[in-house]
Length: 289
Image (cartoon, rainbow, N blue to C red; front, side, top):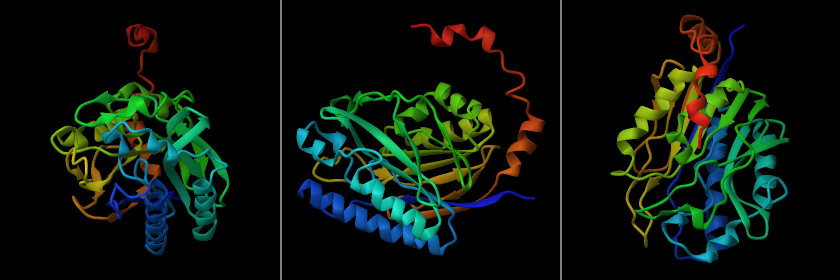
């Protein structure tokens, strides 16, 4: 029996000024995404992934402790609880990237994974943390992830998460494949001029090397007052052969929908035996300091 699932990626512009009170921004963005999740459900989506730090601006464009107000625990914070309700309502798997508080002063860039019955399955914490110009001052806000590369057995298949800058590191993408991922989702916030030439190069390459589906999400538009560049949207799905299946708009809100035939993974792996022919005994240099 064919294993077809319909997935959705949501990219969304900031809907209130970034200079507004932090909690006002969060509420407005959450309300906006609840509506977009509902639209994705009407289109038949069985799973959806939101963009990186979905309920705020990309605040790492500056270094200001006021943004610590966005942190909340996973899974006991209000945003994950709300998304559990949405998952139950729509019978949809939802991946929710938010700013996580582990302990006061210990914060992570994380994504909660919620199953279609509303149950919390676990979380991924962003492993690789950039700190560079223009305006990607993430080490001010986030501790590097410490949960490895988990894969979650959901109602639609085995899902792994990689967040934004992680995508530049093929080692973790391989770990997700070895851990059984069939779909890897990469919520991001990245700007033109810095990484656009890599956007449709690296992640299709991960899909080919590891023979799974990839959903890449990038926010659209620009975000004053920082204006560090244009978040160029273009969220997309690609298949285990690296072919782009569906792609979003560049500068506006969009819901990218694709039908994923998970049986294609076996077909591709039976053609290209990359996992069989690996030589981990020869890769010691990869894990040398």
